[in-house]
Amino acid sequence: EADIYQTPRYLVIGTGKKITLECSQTMGHDKMYWYQQDPGMELHLIHYSYGVNSTEKGDLSSESTVSRIRTEHFPLTLESARPSHTSQYLCASSEANLAGDPYEQYFGPGTRLTVT
Amino acid sequence: KNQVEQSPQSLIILEGKNCTLQCNYTVSPFSNLRWYKQDTGRGPVSLTIMTFSENTKSNGRYTATLDADTKQSSLHITASQLSDSASYICVVSDRGSTLGRLYFGRGTQLTVWP
Image (cartoon, rainbow over all chains, first blue to last red; front, side, top):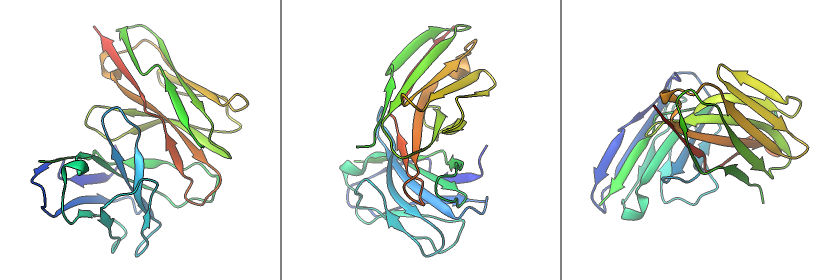
């Protein structure tokens, strides 16, 4: 079992609310990621970080923002939730790797977000 | 365009039977291929990782194969158990960036019946 945690596991919230999805890992990994996954669909990378004070947008455009102030913490924030944000959000982390070397990416249990 | 295609989309088998899941990819330049198991409502858990030079790797009752020439992989599950019911995701990593970008398939939803 990977030491990567996400809270809350489930969240139902009304349109327009600000929400923060928490992700933390105790493995000391430099790289962290946020993915979005709809039922029956593939995971899409929405944000990633190489380390503290580093954040980048992923392949899928997202209205969410992230921050990386501490190595172990990578929260995702939605300033104004909308029904289109309803999805599962998965956080992951990995060790830094040289390009081309296989590395293990560990996933958290996910947050199922429903915006009404 | 880098893609990962999996088949079948869903599969139902009886407990104790074997099954094989397929993955075709067009990701280039290829770095490695991994199979993940994702239980409903959970995050994916890695089963195997294979590099270009590896053509088979086992993890208990799971055996993955890789043909880098034809860009195909398979995951064989032996003597299935009820706990094998999950989505099995094929993921391919490219060699073209320091991020080691991952390309995900949509998964094969496996259901094992008693």
